[in-house]
Each structure stands twice: as structure tokens, then as C-alpha cells.
Length: 305
Ligand SMILES: NC(=O)c1ccc[n+]([C@@H]2O[C@H](COP(=O)([O-])OP(=O)(O)OC[C@H]3O[C@@H](n4cnc5c(N)ncnc54)[C@H](OP(=O)(O)O)[C@@H]3O)[C@@H](O)[C@H]2O)c1
Image 1 (cartoon, rainbow, N blue to C red):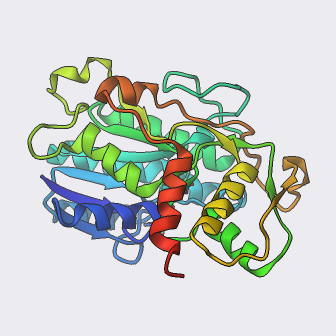
Image 2: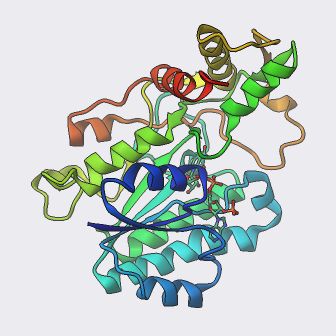
């Protein structure tokens, strides 16, 4: 299995590189090595690269900036994935394309399943939904993986920002009325092996031709079990830091309201918890809880700080 990874310098792409390098034949492209907005370059470089599987973890991910750079957002998040899907089809390779919980409007109060209709409320969400549709329109053997609130050691995210704030300030707060489930990039890497790559002894369960694929129709949600607000997420992270003896000035996370985040340009879904029921049904495995994943991350990467 030869794998090419786009977005190899990003939070998720770098994690996939780190986790797969020793198990598979992997080549990665970061932004400087391959610009998704340059389609000629995409054709030239990817046609010259040998791979069975292309994983696209590159995206225009600045949700607020997407509002004012709509054309760029659609070029990178919607049009480039179509080009990638076509290149993969022509090379008889498979594309795995990452998408987001922000394709949903956030009105539900129970986890979103893959078949729920998407209705984004931001340009970012619109562009990512268009990317999903463009990829699946080219070839339905491609796979869309939606993720949410991801964290990991390769690029700072919300959790690292909260820990830093608590190390420097006595008062910290986070939004208490917006909900999803934090998911560890290392867990996403493993879920992808189980579903789409295979472990060397058997193929992934979403592989075309694999007999368990009857339930599978192109989109999968990868998420930790459970759900929380940003305030609960931050509080648990600080509790885990205290557990390992990390010195903090702030220990209790105060509550902020979503409506008070006046510096945010884009609208964000209030509730965007993704259901992992389909993943569990396909694979027979249940993801670990977000609390276990966060605790594991903090033990592994903050113990020596
Ligand atoms: N982070 C989350 O919580 C979250 C939630 C839901 C969905 N997702 C999805 O998960 C995927 C991975 O996200 P992430 O958290 O790893 O984001 P990230 O850290 O921002 O990584 C995205 C990568 O894409 C690269 N990139 C941006 N524009 C590009 C272009 N024109 N050509 C080539 N590369 C380009 C970025 O490079 P530069 O940094 O050099 O620009 C960056 O390395 C994305 O599809 C995202 O939409 C993430």
C-alpha cells in the first residue's frame, strides 16, 4: 500500500505522517511542496507520484477568514478536492478526504449521523460540504471522513491554548453553550487504518470489494465517544494537568456565552456532535471517550513540561 498525504504540515496531516511512516510506504506534501490552489501543479506532481491511496488533510481551515475570502475557500475546500478525486480515479487510486462537523447547522440535540442533511451556516462549512459532494460525484469509492475539535502534538489547538492561559493567568474561561467531542489525531489515524487502509492482514472494512462494505456509502464520522462544551473540555484538560503535577495559576474554567464571542466573524453551530454509531457498526469497535483521549494526550505530551 503506497500512501500520499496532502497537508503533511498540518495538525492532522503531520499526525498521519508520524503514525504511518513506520507501517506503510508514505510520501507527504506540505503547503510549500504542493499548493492545492494550483491545479496544474496538482496534476503534474500527483501524476508523477506513485500511490494507491491519497489522503487529503489540507484545507483552508480558518473559519473566520473564509467569510471574507469566499472564492479562496471554495477553490481550496471544494474545487481542489474535485481535481484530486479525478486524478485518483484516473490513477485507479482511492481518495480519502477530510471534512467537518461544520457542514451541520447545529440545531439537533443528539449526535449527527452521516445521513442527516447538511445545512452549513458559514462559508467554511459551505465550502467543505461542496468539497464532499464534488469528491463523491467523481467516484463513490472515495471516502469522506468528517471530524470535529481535533487535537494532537503536531500543531497547537484549543486545548494547548487553554493550558497556556491557565499557566499564565488565574482567571480562564471558555464557551459553555457550544457542544461537540474533542478527538485525538492519533485516534483518527488508527480509525483510518481499521476502516480504509487495513492492517496488512486484512483490508479496511470500507475497501471496495470487502464484504462488510454493504453499510458503507462514502461518508464516515470519526469522533471520540461522549460530548461536552468547550468549558467542560478545558476544565478536564486542567484537571488532567493538575493530576500530573503541572503548575497552573488558573484551576477553574469560567463560563462564557457563545453570543458574547463578538470577535468571531463566522457563525458556528451550537451543537455539532458527530455520531460514531456507523463506525462502530462497520468495525465492531467503539472509540474511546473524549476524556480518556484528552487524559492520554496530556500524560504523554505535558508530563515533562
Ligand atoms: N481542527 C479541527 O478541529 C477540525 C475540525 C473539523 C474538521 N477539520 C478538518 O480536518 C482537516 C485537517 O485539519 P487540521 O486541523 O489538520 O488543519 P490545519 O492544521 O490548519 O492543517 C491544514 C493544512 O492545510 C494546509 N493548506 C492550507 N491551504 C493550502 C493550500 N492552498 N495548499 C496546500 N496546503 C494548504 C495548511 O498549510 P499552512 O498552515 O502552511 O497554510 C495546513 O498545513 C481539514 O480538512 C479540516 O477541515 C478540522
